[in-house]
Length: 297
Image (cartoon, rainbow, N blue to C red; front, side, top):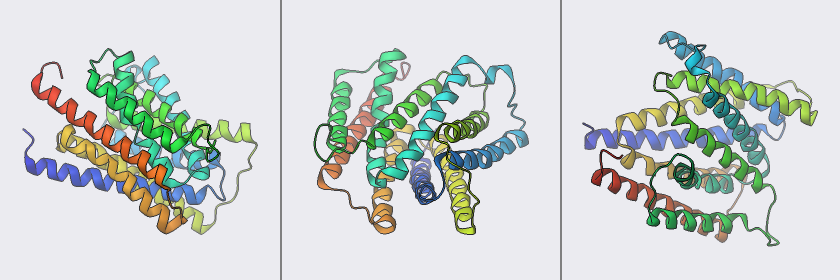
């Protein structure tokens, strides 16, 4: 049974994981000014997949077994690659706080996708929360207005990729360990980066010491963030821990202001607030349903 202490530790780990992901975003955004998207993806993919491949090997988790390479996992890998490509592009072109704000809509879209494609029951209250959350997204994106930035579409494509990835993750056999799934995800970045280089014709550039330190920081904090979020969900209950995913938005705003001199406007802040409140409501509602119908959950 997970105690209050477990939940507190899980919350701390979740917040630390979101801080780690924000620092990873910082380093990728820094790199994007001098290094092409394809080269960033290839380098991060090689380094991170080696780490998770080593973890899988040390724990005797078989990477190249048939059950780890099904149609579901292959489509998931493809979705991961699409999400990563457009996420890196968006970091290069869109303010960090805006990227983070739109990303916060992901849980709402996953809830909608689970209802539409996985047959999960979603009541009218959560559907209303999803609709309200989309209003928040529209406030940030602002289609049709003069302040509309077409580059935010890259973030939306990335969110769709993440949604497909996470929905398919639920269908993967529990016999396939998370280290193997993580290896597949990061390995996909290598191929996605190579294809991106071929399409864009961007040249490979030599990496200086500063850029190498950015790559190192991106890998360290990216892997640490992943480890933190997995550990948080294992230590604490999902209903207690998951809402703290939204701390990433706070960290992103702080980093955007301090490092990149990016100040989100009022509409972006209002949209982000609506998305967060809608998402928090869905977490609370799901927790109540799990308590009322534990077998169904």
